[in-house]
Image (cartoon, rainbow, N blue to C red; front, side):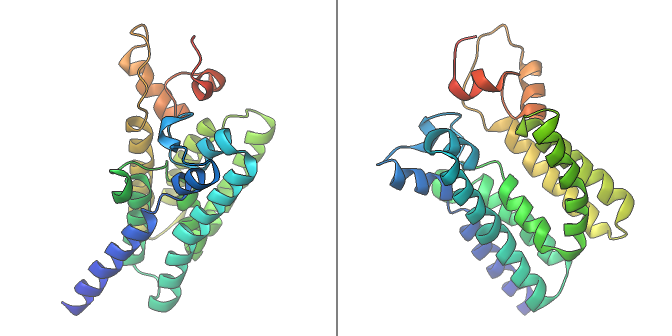
Length: 226
């Protein structure tokens, strides 16, 4: 019973920490009260902040999300308590808090940066992630410069590689749960509604694959008529 209480308290603390909307606060301060949810894509994350405030702001926000929200909590739990399924659950709670923040009326970011931090903090998962991430990064820089598409490919490959390589059933469940949270966020998060000639099925496809409602990243980011 005591262990259950400790786990519940830890989970609640982690959820509150991960719910801190770093990108929203950063833009609010640096852009004199600008509401990040009302500009650009409306996403409360580093990618949308980059469109508003530039690459330096995006790097700072992403770094905070990766290390403060994702890496440090899981690394500390892993080193002080030892690897266990409870730590993997806490990892999912971090993504849950970041994507559906209690401080933002359950709005939030996409969960990519915090997921990177979580995976890097887990010894057994970090190598799998890096093996996938390096060729994905090369593809993003050279072949097809669309981060939304490559993020989807990374999510899929992470699950496939973990399923075939990892002997730990808890890790397989964790990556499945992580993929579920990330994909659900992509399908539900956009607030813009486009002309009726775009079917709901087509919009769903674009949201899952490209993380937007249309194929053109330029039109989507700038909300131009098409």
